[in-house]
Length: 294
Image 1 (cartoon, rainbow, N blue to C red):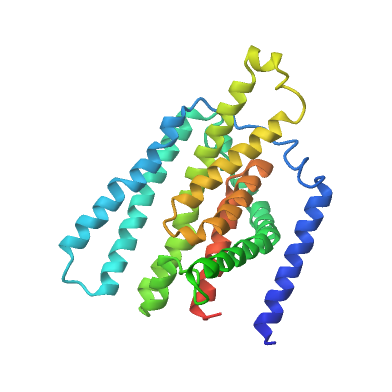
Image 2: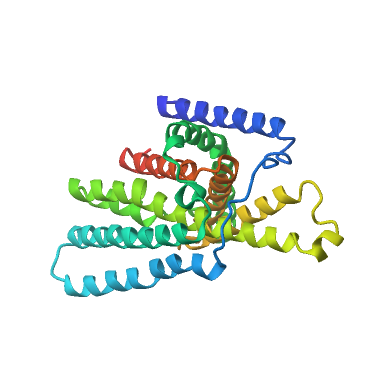
């Protein structure tokens, strides 16, 4: 057993212990979100889907057009150009989200979960959160490989993410730096603002509003614990959407587990910085594994 395997074994063990402590502390998760408060907003669901439409509409179209115009470039240069357009598109979408948040959220960006005073606390808490969920993600990947081999044969392996393939295929330093920025900064900020900040928040608000109607109260839906159930349901829905927008289907189970961790961290802390940091740490670890071929 080499040093890396020993380190990963210790990381896995630490994650199991942390997750076990969380289960004990929260009565197997039942009380985990008992004190979670919804974020007040007046945003309809269709508005929070606007950034998603922009991201999967005009941005890919711009990339496609640019690829046609830049056909004479080398492969790595086209990849660099595509990643640059990705960053520009992400900045545009983030600007749209900020506008929507300022118009639709109580306390604006702070009500959205972007309070700079919590950055230090969220940074260190994110590391613990990712460590706690790491064994579950590894279990999801192991089960995916197991069933994949049953279906497709003993040689089956989960394909790498496209960004990871590119950072391994092209050694150019400028491309690797840009790919790292996209994976560790741009993607976490953009995706967490969309899936946790907007979609998860608005879904929970819709569930809260339906449960507060006179008919729901007559049925007893205002009983203790209903709020945390709605929080978990919004987490599960947003995590499912988060995993499905990633095109690599074999990654969906692990991404769903990661999404639940991200959604829980957001609901528990009230800070969007925490899932952003978790997401960034996860992507950074994935890139390091690829670069060092571990």
